[in-house]
Image 1 (tube, one colour):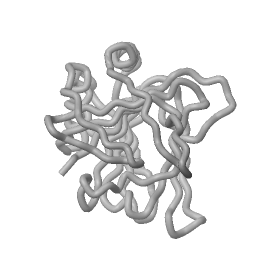
Image 2 (image 1 turned 90 degrees about the horizontal axis):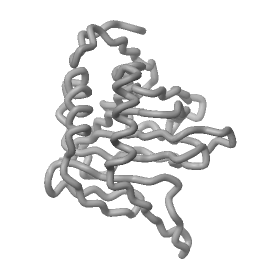
Image 3 (image 1 turned 135 degrees about the vertical axis):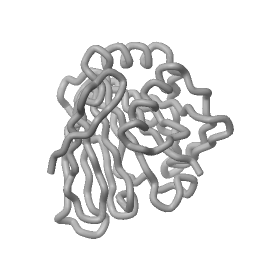
Image 4 (image 1 turned 180 degrees about the vertical axis):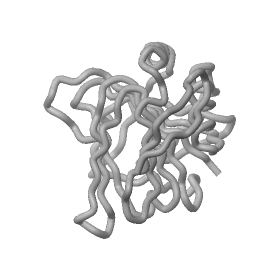
Length: 207
């Protein structure tokens, strides 16, 4: 099902696709950020964000997670994921610009964002749900993609037959809300293909 919504910031209309999935509310704006704007944002974020190499401990061994990350948001918005505790850096102009645009189409007020820099096809994120307690009862996740197109895979937690694959292109915006995180897992899988860099921004509401 497709329908047009009015959007802001010098774009007349943007196409929103409702992804028809059981136990979920997922919407894809395939080109919320036009090419030149997306290019500029990618370059600025790559060069100006305080990227960090986080580590996790598995079976007694410490491993680098396969991507670089950063956490920004309102003051004192602490977040814990995969055993990693992060403290928010203050918003910068580019992040506020992106937040304003997605809030206008989402009608959601986000107060924090987790950024991921995928340097190549070897970088990934494994199966998980964004269901940490600080995200509230029904977490809302607003995901902006810049750079290389990557496949976003989803699978139902309780029904093996329910799966989705969504191509997240340069300038796209994916919105997940409702009970999605209760019922679905998602991942960005490693790829053996030669792939360029990708920045993903997942905006959140920390309670």
